[in-house]
Length: 260
Image: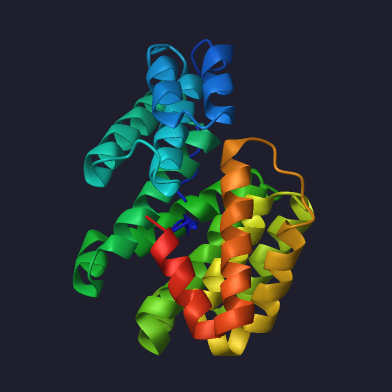
């Protein structure tokens, strides 16, 4: 959610060394994640320290805990844990896309919680864009990376306006195109559709509310595949009702309050 998405997204530096032996996250960790027990899932996966996939999954689970406000009592500390896990995953596999996706999400959360001056000094926008571009150069149709690219463009425009667009190269049409490509790659993913709607509402709710409403309505036709997708569907329904009853600005406020 405050994802920059949106997810925002940290993604891929070409692998220069051969990857170690790979192992998926433990099945029990996957079950815990599906059930919404994100911190327990992260802790279980993190014990598999010889697996890049498991460590990246651990980072994803910790981010999910903060996104859903479930077991994330100290957001900065949880983000530190997630970052360490994702960076450890990259050490094991320098070509890990998933580890970079999680690092990008962490960067986006931190950017939104920082002042403009802090965000500029921290280099969040440059780092996120570079990683997203690297990921897409390797996996051009990766839906999550495309959604993060859409979030990146709209978030830079929201926070930086014309000056941000000039400095970083953010562009509304490119952001919308990235989101549309992400939806074509994953048409039944409610998380991507929610990030699209939220990014539009936060950027300019009066201008983009009709398109956001279409996204929110589509989510209600999707079948959630686990606790995280159910959370996204419930949130989308709440924002949709606020939009219908109280209007675009109230819906933007509801979206903003729901994000970490």
